[in-house]
Image 1 (cartoon, rainbow, N blue to C red):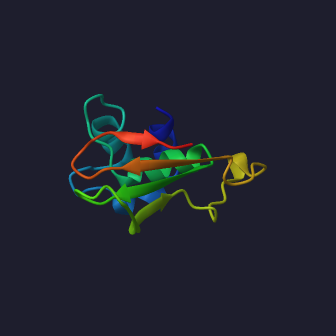
Image 2: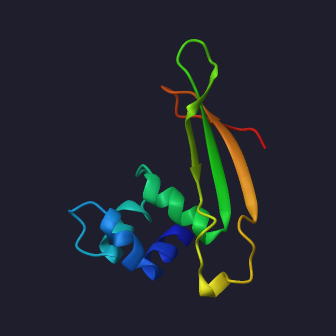
Length: 111
């Protein structure tokens, strides 16, 4: 619900990243954010990270060798985000690092 609320409040910034089937940010949130059993996409992760002033750093492990691949590392959460509602919070409030092994849906939290 927090992700949905953040996307609705910041619809002007995020609507360009919504698929063409959604008529509005409200309908996108109802069909793709608030529902259970729907996969999250990058727009969901960016919105929740910005709403919570947090950063998620996803480290990818390569195939069979299970070695860390730094080129495939992804950081979600932009320290350049300015939101007047929570302007007094220093970004990031929380930073989490996770390991992702391709082919598995499990994310292992490392911090």
